[in-house]
Structures are given as C-alpha cells and as structure tokens.
Image 1 (cartoon, helix red, strand yellow):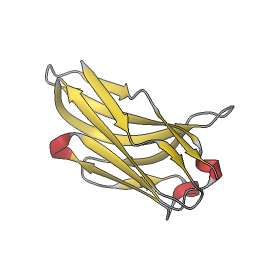
Image 2 (cartoon, rainbow, N blue to C red; image 1 turned 120 degrees about the vertical axis):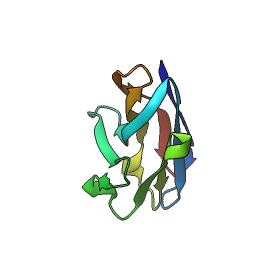
Image 3 (cartoon, one colour; image 1 turned 90 degrees about the vertical axis):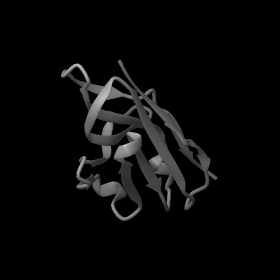
Image 4 (cartoon, rainbow, N blue to C red; image 1 turned 60 degrees about the vertical axis):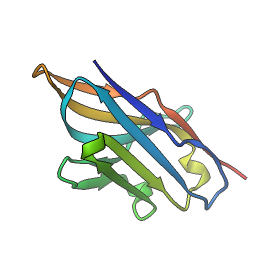
Length: 120
C-alpha cells in the first residue's frame, strides 16, 4: 500500500558529503514522523536522525553537527545531508516513516536500504 524508495548512497572519501533521499508513495493520507536508521556489519540497527511533521528533529550523538535531516511534506520526502563523513559512518541506511493511510489505518514502513561506504 505504501512504498519508500531511497536514493543517494555510494562511495565517498573521509571528510566528504552525501545526500540521501527517501520518497514515499501509495495510499497516503499523511505522514507523521520520518527517520533514518543505519546498520553496520555485525551491529544492530540504530537511529541516526528523525523529524516530526512539524519539523522537530532528533539526532544520534555520533552525528550531531555533521548530519542534517529535513523533509518536504508536499512531496512526502525526507532527506539526510551527511557532511564530514567518517569511516565509521559506513552502513546500510534505511528510511522509516509512520504513515496514516487514506483508508484510515496506520503503517510503519521501511525502505529497502541504501549503502553508504566511507573509505579512501
């Protein structure tokens, strides 16, 4: 009923930047919180950043001051601007959204993930 499609991952050198995008489509009435999570090899998935519909944000301590989350409610899209990237930022990044459906139901939806590799 709802799909999240991520883009923007890739290989970048330490100190570089990447911008991730995640667009939601389907039977959407509205989207509440949107967020980015990541999972590095051998580690648990962790929250990177989240943003409410009103624009309030929350960041993991490890990315504060380097990453910026934003959203375009008209486009049902969330972004993650990642600057000053470090090798320890290497992970698969997943988009997550809380979606109110046109039918009135509610779904928590995950994207398929996009790989970010920070390496020289």
